[in-house]
Length: 59
Image (cartoon, rainbow, N blue to C red; front, side, top):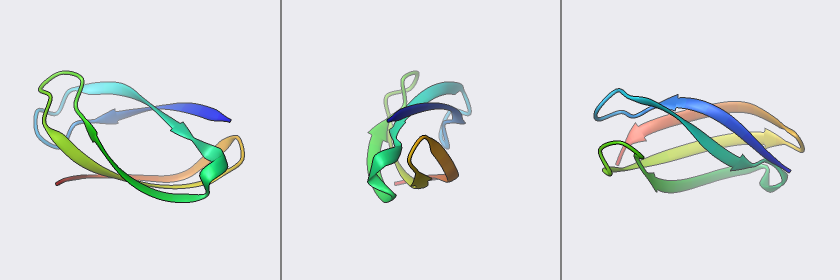
């Protein structure tokens, strides 16, 4: 199940929605900012249908 969460880019500070697949449990992935296009790392801890914690860091 995918859940959308608003996050702030660690580079430009702009907020945008990030979609996370909550069926994967603990996950770490790299994605690009929708505004400035710089890549950053996301660490998400999930239970099916719910994001328990979401951490965003400059890569």
